[in-house]
Each structure stands twice: as C-alpha cells, then as structure tokens.
Image (tube, rainbow, N blue to C red; front, side):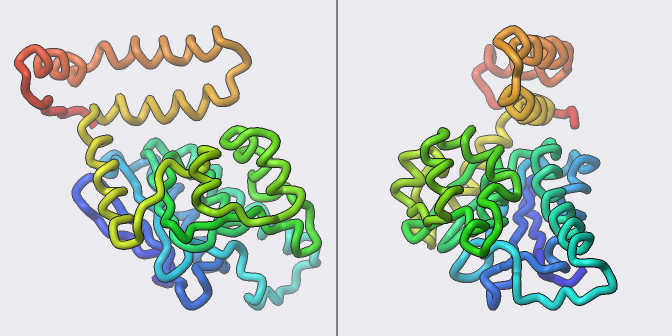
Amino acid sequence: MSGELIIERRGDIEIATLNRPQRMNALNTGLVAELNDYFGGLVDRPDVRVVILRGEGRGFCAGLDIQEDRDSDETPVLRTLRTQTQIGNIYRKMRACPQPIIALAQGAAAGGGLSLLLASDVRYGTPDFRCNAAYIRIGLGGCDMASSYFLPRLVGASLASEMILTGRFVVAPRALSAGLISEIVEPEALLDRGLELAAEMLATSPYGLRLSKQALSLNIDAQSLDAAMAIEDRQQVILSATEDYKEAITAFLEKRPPHYSER
C-alpha cells in the first residue's frame, strides 16, 4: 500500500480518506488500486457496518490525474481501456459492498471524483463544494465513469444533461436543491456530521441495514412496481426470521434500545 488511501477505524465505522492533497486527491494508479482493494474487500467484512469517504486537504477529488506518467508497452487503446476498467471497477464495488457509504465533500469533486460521490449512498458538502462531469472539457465524451447512469437518477434528465453536455460546475446550493447532496455543512463540522449519521445507521440491525442498501440498489433499476415489491417482500421475510428481529420487537415493547447479536 502506498498510503494514498488512509483507513481509520471508529468502532463499527471505517473512515476512508483520499490522501493526495498535493494533487487535490486526483486518481493515480496507486490510489485507484487501493480504492479497488478496499471496496472490494468490504463484502467479506461484516465487522465494518458503515464507511465514511472523504478527501484530505482543500478538495475532495479532482478526478483522473492526467499528469501521471503512464508510459508502458501497451498500445494507447489498450492502455486507455485498462484505465477505464480499473477506475470504473471502483464504482461497481462501491455499489456492491453491503455497507452504506457516507461521502463528505469539500471543495471540488470533478470527473471521476464526482463519480465517487455518485456511487456513495449519502453525500454531504461544504459551502465551497462544487462538482462537474469534466470529461467533455478535455476532448472526450461527456458520459464517463457511470455519470450517465447515476446523474439522471439523482438529479433528473435536465440537470444531468446540462452537466454532461457542458462540463460546467454545480455549486453547493444548487447541488442541495437538486438532491445531489443531502446537506450543506461547515468544514469544521463535516466529519462529526458524517459520524452522527453513521451512528444512526448503527442503531439498526446489521442485516437490516445491509439488505436495505441492497434493495435500494436493485430497485433503482426495477422493471416494475411488482418487481420492486418482490425484492422488498424477500427482504422482510428473511429479516422476520432472525433473532435480531425478535430482539427489536422485545426492546420496543420494553421501551429500551435493542442489543443486536447477528453479524
């Protein structure tokens, strides 16, 4: 590990910090590898229940580090395909991991950095937060790194098209009104706000939290109302058979916090 992704443990929470502040946390080969390893490994880590994703320094993530030396024996086409696949796999793994991901963003989130936010489950931003789908500004197509998948679902077709077809920045107030972020938080309070939300998530049963993220991820592409409700029914039938469900009902009736045991 190169130390470009720092992992800090806080009980059942892990804080993953992009640690290339001198490059605005831009995605180089080392950081991409660490992000893939980390998010890919979370599937087998029930001890981690919530992840907080943040960036060190004055910006969240400036996207691909286009100044990195990528000299290799590969043809340009194959080298670009490999880069696209490696970075894209981060977002796939973020959506596939069972832990909710809370993203905390200050300053700029551009290109692939924007997609790190879009692939998260909840996003908070500071007053100076701004984001853009930068790809079209460097001679590429505007649809990249799952932006054409995530953005219309989060903010609607009109704003998604505006962002993708121009690469223009969207600042914090507009991001909030569009639903791209949930809240605007002062920089000094950002981590505490994320930890507060994570603590609320930890008050739920471990499998209830995991299956809820799974159902949300599946149902965003549900073919019909019946298909979505079938996923919900499956979740509830499974959870109603757990010991944690019995404990939650007992705790509710006894007016006390539940003590969950199943991981």
